[in-house]
Length: 191
Figure 1: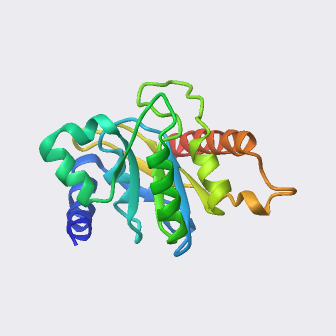
Figure 2: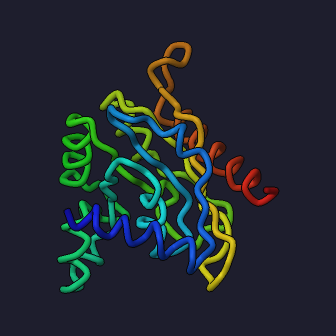
C-alpha cells in the first residue's frame, strides 16, 4: 500500500522536479520473474526506476542503509533487502531467489557503485537470472537530478539467458547486461 501511494506521488513530482520521462516501459514484462539491472548515479535511482512500472521492484540495497533508523523502516516497507558488499551475501541471494521464484522483480545495480565512469559488472545479477530462470531487463538512467532538468529512464529489451543458443554463462550474461546498459545510455543521451 505504501509503495503504491508513493509511486503515485512520484509520477507527479519526479516529472515536475527532474523532467523525468520513461522510455520503453512497454518492453517490461507484465509478469514472471525479472532481474532489473541499471546503472547507478544517485540515491534517487530506485524510486525513479519504479515510477512508471506497473510492477513492484524489490531492490538489493547496501546493508549500511538498514542501520539508519528512519530510512531502514521506509526501505523495508518498500521491499528493499540488504546485501553485504565486498563478499558473498548468502541471505541476500536466498531472498532474491525466493522473490524470483514467486515471479517478482528484483532490482540490482550490477556495477555495485554510483562512482564508476566505466563500470565493470559483478556477476550477481547474471547468477540470479541463470539460477532462477528469470529474464533480465537492462535499464539506464541518463541526465541529472536537477530542478527542471531532463532526466530519462530507458528500459531495454528483455534478455532471456535460457533462450540464447546453448544458454548464456554468468560471465557472458554479465557482459551482455553491461553492454546493453551502455547502449541504452548512449541512445538516451542522443535523444
